[in-house]
Structures are given as C-alpha cells and as structure tokens.
Image 1 (tube, rainbow, N blue to C red):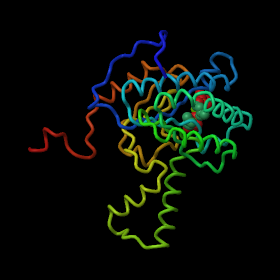
Image 2 (cartoon, rainbow, N blue to C red):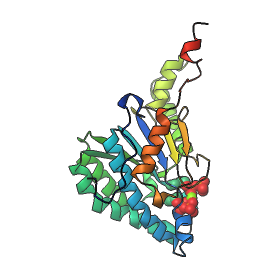
Image 3 (cartoon, rainbow, N blue to C red):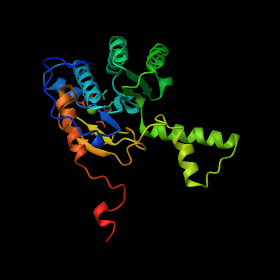
Image 4 (cartoon, protein in one colour):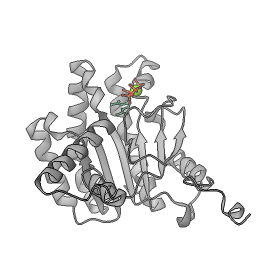
Length: 257
Ligand code: IPE
Ligand code: IPE
Ligand code: MG
C-alpha cells in the first residue's frame, strides 16, 4: 500500500485526537459507474478494487485503527447468479493477489459474515489469510462478506440464549446483558463504528453494521465507489473531525447551567 507518484495529494493529515477509531464503508455505485460507460456491471466491480487499495493506503497513512469494508451483503445473494459468481471470483482473486502486500504492510485481515454460505475453498482462503496476518497491528482491515446487520444480531442472540441455557447468566443486570450479548457479535472486542461512509449517492444503511453503528456519524457522498480515492477518504475524515458528538448528553459548555 505504498503511495504511488500519480496518486492525488492528500487533503490533510488529521489530528490523531479527532480520528475515528473505526471506519465502516458501504462501497456502492460500481454498477452505475459501469452503466454510464456502457460496460458490464462486472467491470465496475473490477474497477472498485483500485478504490479499495487507495482507501487502505489512506487509512494506514492517517492511522485509522479499524477499517470495515462492505463487500457483499446477505441480500446480494439475490442478484443474478452470474453477477454473484463474478463477485466471488473477484473476491478470491483480490485476496490471492493482495495478501502478500497487506501482510508486508502490517495489515491484520479478518472477515465477518455468514461463512457457511460461501464455498469451502473460499472459506479456507479466508481462514488462511486470517491466520497468516493475526499478529499484524498496523491496520485492522475487516471485510464483510455475506454479512447482514440483522444476521449478526440474531446470531449473537442465539449464542446468548444457548449460553444462558447451559449456565444461567444474571441477565437482569443491564451491564451483564450488554456485555454477554456483545461478546457474541461478529465484531466482538472492537470499538463501535465512529464513521459510517456510503458512496454512490444512496442514503441508507442497507443492513450493514446496525448494532455497531448506533452512534456513528453518517457520511454520504455521491462519488461512485470506483472513483473513490485517498482524497475522498481524507475529505470524510476532515468532515468527521469537525463533528460534535454528544451521545445523548448536552454540549459540554452547557452542562453547568
Ligand atoms: C456495490 O456496487 C457493490 C456490491 C453491492 C457488491 P453495486 O453493484 O451495488 O452498484 P450499483 O448500486 O448498482 O451502482
Ligand atoms: C450495499 O449495497 C451492499 C454492499 C455495498 C456490499 P447494495 O447496492 O446492495 O444496497 P441497496 O440494494 O442499494 O440497498
Ligand atoms: Mg448498489
């Protein structure tokens, strides 16, 4: 993920105190990018890879600890079989081609989603990539594949019910309930999403990290994913740095009145 000479100059370096701890991105707009150029949708997905690389570079340069990218949703299984097939091939190909460089750059790679729906060979590749990069700590890159926020909440609820049936927990205590539930989420142990980015102009969550983005700042841009780059990522971080986050409280200077 080394910077290349033709990459656009970054807008700015963000003050580390104002950096999000966890950025999640809905990488949307590949199909529209392709259609506008009279190209097959698949070409749009292929071009999206460039944006993924640029985004990873920018996250590393700025020092963002966790980056979660939405690559394929629970609902994307409903797309035509040839598009699903092409997306899976692209995913496998990207994983095989990029893994060395990611590892060399200290990136820890993990995946969240309903793995059992993926081919065994794909699952094996994912397991191997996770095992190989487990000791890296420069950036935690998390790819959501066959992921849905509702699936995540339901599987955490099921795990909690099973645990409780085996040995009852003090679930009347809200803190115990919360931590027991969160320990079953796919993102267990991670800070919540601070900055939720969606490219491609739609203003919806599309079943991404529903629980984890409860207090996320939402950044929507019309830029189609294949055109997203380091400058666009920096722009989102700059916008985030200017937000006042209240988490239900009043502004700090009003608290004493
Ligand atoms: C996002 O681009 C990629 C995936 C959902 C896999 P789309 O394929 O949704 O592109 P649009 O929204 O049709 O432009
Ligand atoms: C969300 O995009 C899923 C991913 C980017 C992987 P979609 O294009 O599938 O979302 P909708 O259908 O517009 O809500
Ligand atoms: Mg879309």
